[in-house]
Length: 456
Image (cartoon, rainbow, N blue to C red; front, side, top):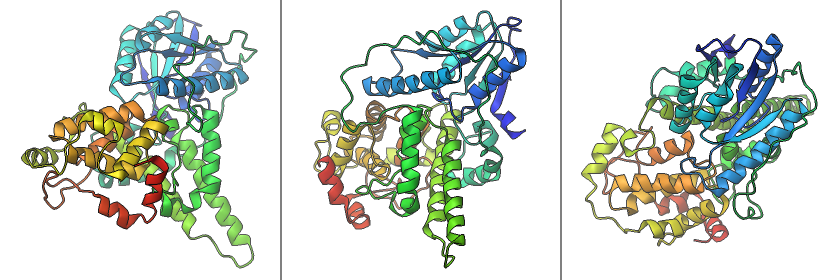
């Protein structure tokens, strides 16, 4: 069974006979399409044992802000309510996640959790494996193709990982049916929720949770998917899926997004073929292909990067050719130098850059195409490439709802040459790909509307 390849059982102590099955929910804050949750329910049912789900809230997650904690708590409330509807108790804990999880494992028969791709997540799981007095099961539920199944090594680019994923994804793009819990019953003790982290979210802000993620996905499929391939890069049209924050917090599964998009495509094409005239929509299949490329190939290239490159959040993660060329040009005269404060405030001489910085600060998201331009200009306007890299990561992690994520780490690294090839050499950038405002104006006729919307 290919789905079994998601599961890694780490043998430890035998665990308490008849003890509770624990599911430590951490990277997948959802009850739909959650392989880890369904596996934990299956274990509890098979053993006739009780099941408890818990989440450990840590007040000092590296780089997390009030915006991130608010989104997280909204997602946890959805998860708790949806678990309760399935008769499964949920507990919210506080402390160091690995230590708390290990402590809760005393008296348990098994503890199940998701695979985590970033350094803090992996450290917490290492603590759990070291200290838990029962077997630990890690389930890779946040990738379509499990990261270690795709490749045993870091991949150079999308071109090298794409054929590997394409060969495998059909086996893993399968519906995840909810397993009824054998001991389901009324949940009598709701979790104790902490107070809101800071002031209320601004109107129009993104709200976390699998329920909202499902609503937004439905809107995207019905309103924007058809023209996604054509319009996704246009900053003024905002034709993106808006799924990135929900994928980051595990509020939605990439498997669910992909399957729903493919089902929507197949249904519309079937209806078109049966209708009078037998005219199908030629844009929809291409748009779905584009979505799957972004959702699976590009996103899982980023997961591959963080999993296999221990320097994924550092300038040292760049390929040798990129570091060499950037260092050779580190002394080049810059067209402008801006301080970190000026950049954070969006106070540069470039209205396009200011607009995307303002969008990120105000909304928690920046348009995908503008994120590339944004990172390139930080490189151009900072005294040296190492400082530019650190500043880009710092701003991305602080303000983006999907900050501190493989996509963000890979996205910043791409601006400095990662997952790319050498280009024609030029000042400051060396052989790293260059972007400028003239290219924006030439490519997007409505770019001024984007500037007006966000204030450049």
